Image 1 (spheres, helix red, strand yellow):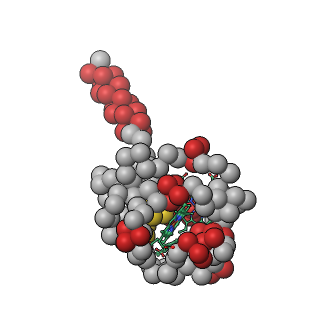
Image 2 (cartoon, protein in one colour):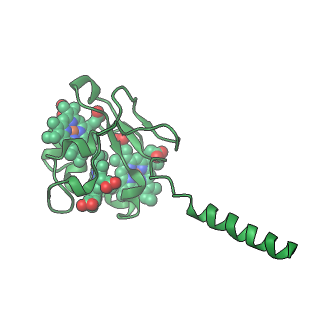
Length: 137
Ligand code: HEC
Ligand code: HEC
Ligand code: HEC
């Protein structure tokens, strides 16, 4: 009986462990804020892993020319609308288009450019990102 209970206990612990939701990919996100705050926009939160599972590194870091450094690219909206950087995909064809300002500019104002390494600190401002479902194609 004791052994049975121990086994059940272990099983339960395992279930609880597995039930802990995987962090919502905030870890590893890149905050890009070279110009946003100064321009009165919320900083950009780039979900790196979300993109990494969908595209090869080469697509962005070779073909599109993104340098391997948080904030290391002089990205602005003119370039994006011209189809550079994020705009190579966020053009209403490969992914939702640039008019969804808040989906990219979703950061807490004042958050500096960084690679986010905390799963506790919240990057996204309340009411900021409404998720891709809210995005118009
Ligand atoms: C696909 C992602 C994306 C979307 C959508 C987007 N932006 Fe940006 N935006 C960026 C990135 C990345 C930067 C560079 C951030 C930085 O360095 O601060 C930027 C920078 C800016 C800047 C500062 C530089 C500049 O060009 O003046 C402004 C202002 C801005 N965005 C406004 C907007 C507005 C308004 C919209 C909606 C019409 C919008 N953005 C939609 C990604 C996006
Ligand atoms: C959809 C485009 C995209 C893909 C795919 C992608 N990256 Fe990135 N990566 C970026 C952007 C954007 C940044 C931030 C650049 C900036 O802030 O200007 C970045 C930043 C980085 C950085 C510097 C920040 C950090 O986390 O240390 C490294 C290293 C990096 N990427 C490695 C990779 C590797 C390895 C892969 C493939 C497994 C990959 N990336 C795939 C877009 C991409
Ligand atoms: C190589 C193509 C590509 C590039 C470059 C790219 N994205 Fe994306 N992005 C996508 C695709 C595809 C999706 C998924 C779209 C969908 O769900 O409809 C996406 C989704 C997103 C999302 C929503 C993630 C979520 O949780 O739903 C954000 C935010 C985002 N991108 C920001 C950016 C920013 C900021 C940049 C530039 C720094 C960028 N993306 C560059 C292809 C790209």
